[in-house]
Length: 628
Image 1 (cartoon, one colour):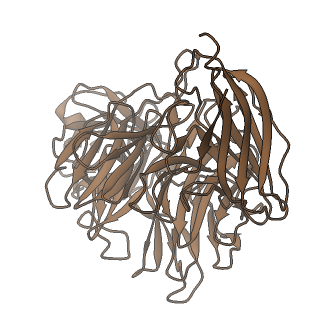
Image 2 (cartoon, one colour):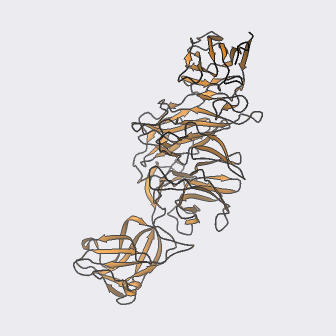
Image 3 (cartoon, rainbow, N blue to C red):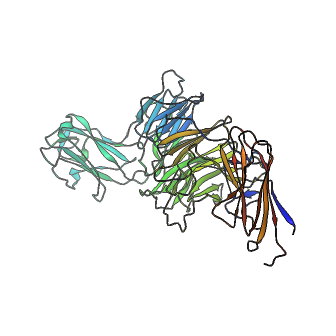
């Protein structure tokens, strides 16, 4: 019986979505393997190394690089960090900012970084030291905006003990912006009773109440009633009318300044709106498009033209420049050709995000509303990113590409199929989880999940040049080595950024938080794995004889080993041979076992230099003399 060789010398097809078939030169699985740099060789990618030590104490959610090369980063608790060009990380004193919502943008003219909070905008002044002075953190730099107001207080209205739905006992407002942050009323003379402001809609449903004690009131001044939770209202372009009442449930009455006696509807007042809506998903990423800063603002896009350095007025800061259908809120944005694209999700307050609806809106920067929209029925689109005039996003555990027409799934992310698992899970990606390094698109997946089998890491898609097809791979894991979620480790990958020749990966693993770096001076990963597609020789029903496998490679650098292994008929684990060590150029593993299906694999170990694998050879006998 003749011995038949199968020789694998090409790898450019990358990981396949199947265990048995795929594109030309593809394989079943790899981790830490570089199969693109030279499609005729397998090597190991540079490893991730934690650069932040114990400095970072929470998930880094966004980073910006300044003209000097310094990096400024913010974590989910509002703490701010700097990274020097020498790679030294430091916590900035004076923090944390009140909160942070995944948005940072640097204005060189102001030498200021603007940071989105849940409801307001913070600033980091003297960010790069252009004008002297030290970097300074400032919470809530942009205060709430006045929407409606009246200024006459020549007469008075006396508060009542209970709410009465009559015209003289309410003040109606038709908001142009929302959400309502507070109401200010002119107190002429306070009584002994606490004073309650109650906000109603047109059907007299209570939207919010707030009480100020009599002791906290000031006569002859505007007093502010601050709602503990934002009051949501329908604002322009289709506003509704609302009204509020002022009562004193006990004690003596307070008089409110009005233009008409005994008529609250003519009171001297101001209604104030928060700069931003507090979203369910906590996402307020910021992007630059044309001359604007675009801030995703729940169901809106806030557009800010940064002319003045002081808190911008409503002329510069339009909270509701774009309005999306009710229930949708932004997850991420990107510039695609001449449009600004916004990915949105319909999000529930449930941790498992029960909705499976998403849309991507496109706006040209001048039209009154968005220009067009595409549906994403696969699930919420996350991590929107533009590369080579194509939009990429994650949805429903898949990685998608869109450049017009129908979206194309480039890959179903590994181990995201939960059918028959009795597991209810979800996959969320934070706004800044894609980047480009060496021309290859990278995607950190997932940011968050309860799946205990899905492998966290930085995946890759692309080709080093046009002569090879774009391919998929599992490229980088975080420096702790943890790859799967448990309730104890609360694993997260919160942000990736590529600055120059350096890749930064921010993560959370149990009590450890940090940022990993990959750069040209990195050593290779200590371990790497490659697995072939399952080989059945076209007859999965026919018994064959596996004779041997062998791996050829260039002389191994010091500290490197290569171990061949195989798996017959979908066994639960691989059988390993003896490892090749330094100075060897080939390793053989005699199998001499019968099989119907077989899978070949290797494990590589490295220290300061990567092995270079040339071929994987498999020899078998087809046993044609034996009956089927």
